[in-house]
Image (cartoon, rainbow, N blue to C red; front, side):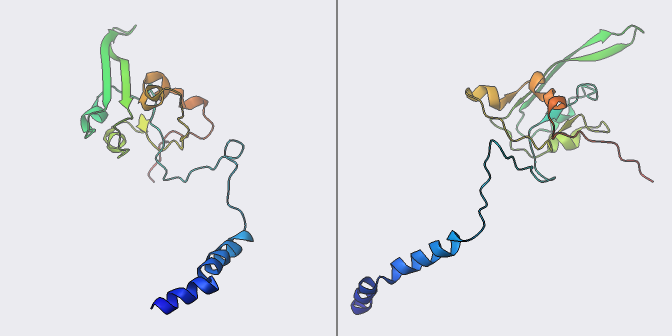
Amino acid sequence: MALKRWLDRLTLLDLFDGLSVTGRHLFKKKVTIQYPEQKKLPSDRFRGMFRLDEERCIKCTLCAIECPINIIYIDWHNEKNPQGKSVKVLDRFDVDLKRCMFCQLCEEACPTNPKSIWLTTKTYEMAAYDRNDSLYLDIRKLTDWRAAENVKPFTVVEQG
């Protein structure tokens, strides 16, 4: 056994094994993406950031109730519309992403068709200098999906 170890050291077999791996990868096609200039579009199943369509939301709070870790905070109040009917007005819709596990239970609980909250937005760029800025979504950040180019809200599918 000692003789074999000594011969391996003498012939530098380990060095040539490592160099052969390097040599094989040296001539392969590069797979690096130059990130800020080139952006990879995530797959359709990617769970991105939350988005909310305030017009579709009926303020039922089912998404907050269904959330297993209670990170969705919704506040609303009643107002009278010009016809005299009482309507719910959304005051606060916040999601604490520091604790979110992206399970999509809030999306499944939403009774509206199409959904008023969804996770498949393909948004993955949430960098910020302050941790609380990027990890706590308020109503302003949740509804800015209309300006993004790769965000598609749910559409109604007609059953035939």
